[in-house]
Image: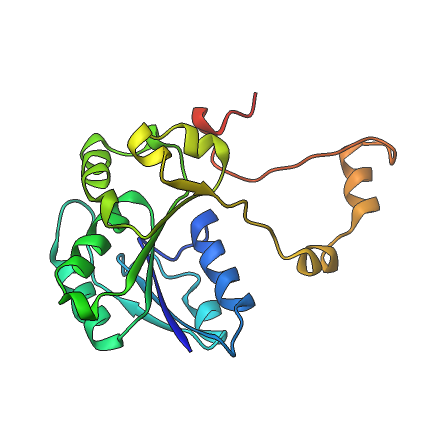
Length: 207
């Protein structure tokens, strides 16, 4: 059994957070045991859904801004949980996770996997600097699109792989009401229709 700890900033509904939930729901339960840890105690909307998949969720009691005490709590969780893999989401979380794992005795260190979910320039300069400095501690670095990968410095880009995440097709189809929605929008049946729900920010490049 491979023990995996996912570490993320918060667990309110969002892209990265939903991917963690889908990973928990669709894991190979005969081979993987998942645990999730999050920094922000006020961002917990998806916690019940994750726990319903048989995954323990730990609150690291982080606070907005620079408060490194969560790294110490994460180190303790990793040491006690005897994880094989720590998978961190976002540069800030990844940087702290790398340092927590690196501080453990070498024989006790899990491998570190990190995923970058947004373009490099969307993160604070201090976070980018810390991420760049600690990147060598990764065993695997993932970006969610080629655009995200291209936005990173060469040092990171050269060691990153793009992983295009999918959606739960059966779940989406079960909710589909194609004819009604097209009628409400005034879109003919033979026309291609694309919809998106996301933040209206320049780097999303809707134009």
